[in-house]
Image (cartoon, rainbow, N blue to C red; front, side, top):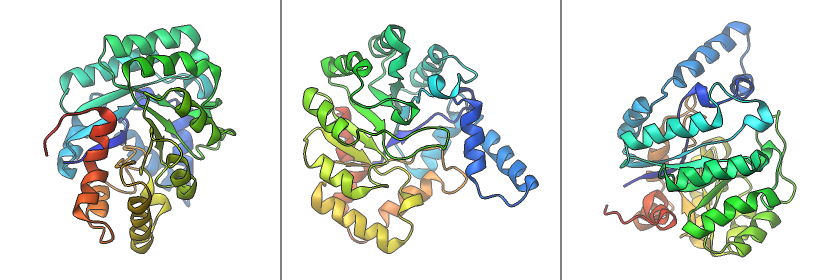
Length: 300
């Protein structure tokens, strides 16, 4: 079994134009014509608004379940084609059509205020969403008082919170209080399992040090293919993860953010092909740790 703990709906309707333009600019194109090719490929890849193509890719990769994360970029980068309420409704439609294949985390910027809290609470109670997604580079810290009403909802229902960690687009910032901020809120909200997005790909030493200090902090490995580039490095890093915190590591692809560089199937195969960790440790990475965080009762 494989659970992808870090993915997004491949729809340009949910991302601000400034976000997708920045992604296009990040490719090292040598000419304007090459840039147009990248733009065309990206637009084509972000046209799967209801997730049917996503399901096909999951099947090709033998991914049984994906956590769809809603990232709220609107306050920082300008609203996308769909308003946030409509983005939540779109994800509810995808979830309703495929309840056995997707889990949805609602994304919220604390500057949305009371309306944001109410929308998130509605998504939990009425839409069946199962967690919270945060993106601090948009301009807030994890210990921002504005997040506490959202944390209180997650704490009440014992729902996980996944937060982006590390650098982001050039348009955005980098949180200043991390990792002390995550240690603070993890201590205050002990019923929440916090997940460090990309924690197993960037600044892995800080990640290991952080999760060792709190029993309710986990991390995913999404974007590892960009930062741990050789087979030797990958084997060494995953051996260290499994020696230090084997029950905290979660598989994730960050689909569709790097769809032009690696398929989900290739990412699954990279982890499955590791020689430095055992079959039991791979099972923990691929799904057993995730079932604990998500409180799922599944059979392989």
